[in-house]
Image 1 (spheres, rainbow, N blue to C red):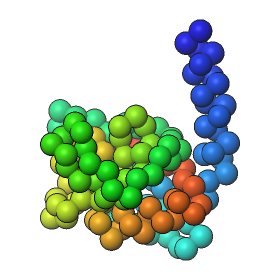
Image 2: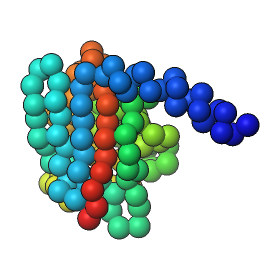
Image 3: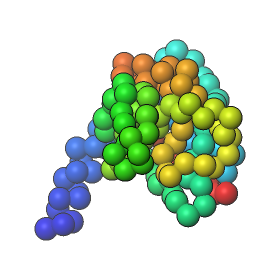
Length: 136
């Protein structure tokens, strides 16, 4: 039964990933995000999971968008322009911009508030294919 549910979920998500116009690739090793969309190509520093935590690897579709989300798990921490891609994992803005380029998060992918807002708008208009790879 579990396999049938997983297969059905993959069938529903596969078309969304295939038709998405925004391509987001996060390289955990270099702590960079590369974005290609109708509005151009971008490369931005990010922060992924610090030691003891993990950022999921694989290919994902954007599962939900929230202009402002507050983490229930981490002291109501603000997560502006959140793009959820796997369970509670999201790409979102951070106000701790001095830490960008280093692994410091609990698993989410953090980027500057301005870049998060740009990315959020692109994904809202065009959909997204998110791939995460690399190692530290």
